[in-house]
Length: 203
Image (cartoon, rainbow, N blue to C red; front, top):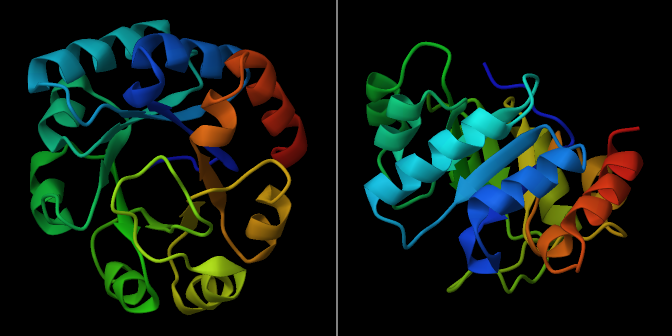
């Protein structure tokens, strides 16, 4: 079972080496990281995942984006699936006991449907406009996020354009966690920015 901290950081390879990004995120105090490397081969992603698992703190967790096979082989905390990835029910058959599944949703109906799937958390977004995902779905906004959080039983991870300034408003909508890419990784010092985030949202 995954432990959802309020800050869910994403080590996105479009910003550099995901292993080094993850190292900086962990050194900044985050304890839940997703490795996201869309263009990597299975072997490259496995190597990167295993490298992060070796360097991360004992109380930290790593989630693999998209690749159920890599998550299973590496022994990561879980996998994060999109609408076009392997179905959660099939992923559950592949993963080991205790490995978690996160599932991306982009509207109320998808979130309600995900609530009955064998997933551990439901990602909802984009909450705000984002530039870290090509062909992003329509922006939901805080009102729609609040509606989704009130209609599902499973914890919600909000994602998409969330900044340090907007994080508290997002959490107040009922989200258990905020997934952040750009506002952590675009800053010159990822470690320092992460510490700012941890101080604000984990307190």
